Amino acid sequence: MSLPVRETARLETPRLILRPRRVEDADALHASYADPDLMTYWSGPPHTDIEQTRADFVRHASDWRAWAITLRGDDSAIGVVAAGEKRQGNVSELGYLLARTHWRTGIAREAVSAVIDRIFAEGQRRVFADTDSDNSSSRALLERLGFTLEGHLRGEWETHLGVRDSVIYGLLREEWNATAA
Image (cartoon, rainbow, N blue to C red; front, side):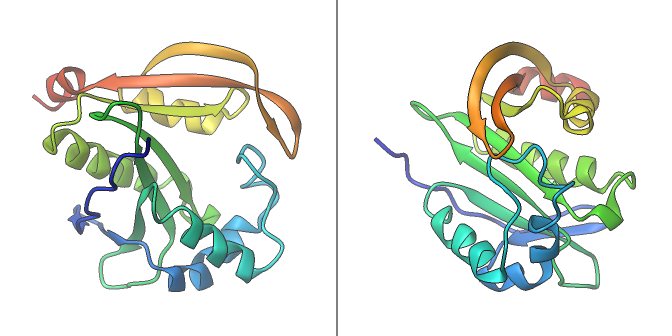
């Protein structure tokens, strides 16, 4: 049973506008999806052409809400934050990608925080992220945001790297609200 996808509302932060991702954003984001280093811990290999990126955006439009990360004053996508509602509802999985030129600027934290705010404002009780156990950058971001390491799943994913372990981080609405207070 698949749950209906909620509206992807425009979100604003001091530096960013997160708007619904469009298929045309593949033009700006393809270089990131084709980058072997950036895609190392992704669930699939780097994209080989822009048509693959476009097809990926279309394929996931029905089961994930995706926000294009843009800088204020520039509508070009520099990354994506996505949320997919899971299980019985009120639980969402997060995923994110940011162009290499914007790493270590706080943009990922700002964008993911805005999406978490939105998800909890909609009544979700929990968000989680599933990342490769060796993806230290993603794990550090989740920990800075207040996520708790909840599990280590051995041999969980078969990816372009082979069979990989997965770590699950979770965050409850009351924990997020307590950090914001």
